[in-house]
Image 1 (tube, helix red, strand yellow):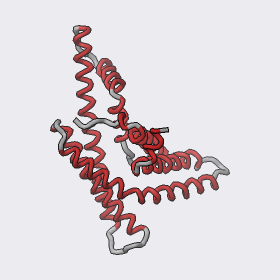
Image 2 (image 1 turned 30 degrees about the vertical axis):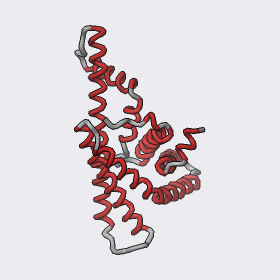
Image 3 (image 1 turned 90 degrees about the vertical axis):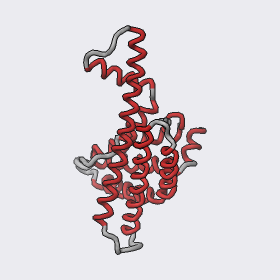
Image 4 (image 1 turned 180 degrees about the vertical axis):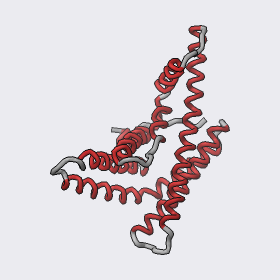
Length: 224
């Protein structure tokens, strides 16, 4: 109950919940569209998906503030790689939200003098920059965890990994021993342009991972 209360009291928590709902609708719509007699259900899912997507825009201010705060915190990271990846990722995230908000302002008719394609291109560019930098940080953290696991294993067994399978086992052990790193990696996998089914599934999994880190702050990957 405490985790649920903490989750709903945060703007980021509501955004993750809306995001999960949005991508669940997209996934269900993709699965039901080929089936006969499901046209009305598909139409309702499409309308709900659109409404939830619009509703998420109202959380933008709180999310932008959080992204700015995250940028300030990452500046003080002691580890150089973490410092660079997180600071640049958060800066790109802030720029993405600004671009996305400007596109939303145009879409609701508050202004017309905005080049939609230009701002959409900028939004997509900074979104993927942020995503790649966040994944870069995760890969760096994974490599550090694998080194620790390998070092501890070498001390016990007086041997080091030799074949690819052993490195894969090291990867699983590293992620198993460090759940926040696994969750952060899943969350940062993001959504790539493909069919709506893959986008919906990827978005849902990513949203659930993000919801867990909001409800349980101890599961969030710490900054070095």
